[in-house]
Image (cartoon, rainbow, N blue to C red; front, top):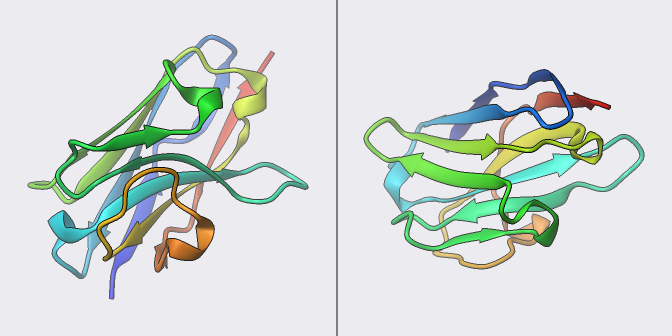
Length: 125
């Protein structure tokens, strides 16, 4: 079993930055593929970014490429999402998700075995 806890969300003006953190416990963290997802009101949950267990393979949805960076610190069992140049359309609840499978690329929702509770990100115009 894996427990995931997100933090770092908040209210920021367009063009600003936030760093989200996802702390994991309950299983050897370094074996997990970790992804960030988001869900805006009235929309389905969507993939944002993912990191392989080594941190070498990183993938992003097109709308955040060049603005968001995913990273992980296996010694701290934590994965981060640095979000720069935020836009109002980035407003959503952000979730981290984990899979014990070695995955790369865009992660489908169905590939995720464990979810955090989410953290709200609101970007004002």
